[in-house]
Amino acid sequence: MRRAERHEPALVEAGFDHSLRQQQPVCRVEDDGQTVLVLVQSLDIGGLERMVVHLCTALKRKVSWDPVVLAYDQRDDSENLIAELSKRDVAVEAFKKPARFSFKVVFKIVRSVFMQHVAVIHCQDLGSLIYAVAAKILCLGQVKIVHTQHSFIHLDRKKRYQAYERFFTHFVDELVVVSDDTRKTYIDLGFESS
Image (cartoon, rainbow, N blue to C red; front, top):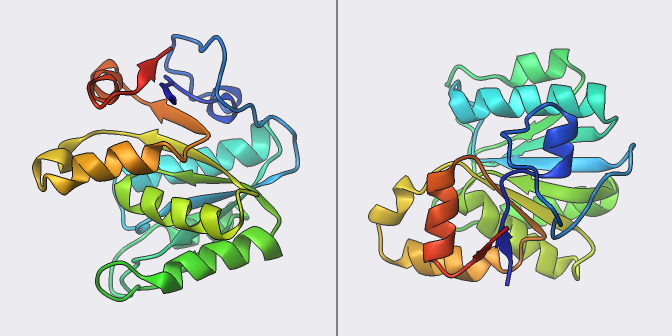
């Protein structure tokens, strides 16, 4: 059973430690020079998206990872952070997916894993987690998933989201939570705490 971790090594190295250092992480991904695919719904201006910019910058500077960003539901007409990431020498692929689940997104992730030698997919929410897991299965487990859960406001929207969280989180190699409330929700969903 996966544990609800407070943070993961690359984030700690990059200065995103939120205290409570983990004792034994589920997966340790420390080697410099590897590629991490940051999977995000969009890069419209917002808190999560700004965090992606800071994370990618820190990964490049402090732990020498090569971050690439895939924004799979990016609107053309929105103000966004793509230019800011490009200025920081972070590769970005952004497109607007069709409605509902899109196999196009999964295949773009799989293509990135093999063509860009991605070692880790870092996802931020339930939607990107589902896509990351589908890609990991198609890659026969050759890529690790680090999932950062920021909140669970989506669990109240639809009952099936709790089942999705329970199922897809089992494929995660390292689970990162940003608050004690989020950790408690994972424990309530049946995951161990560390």
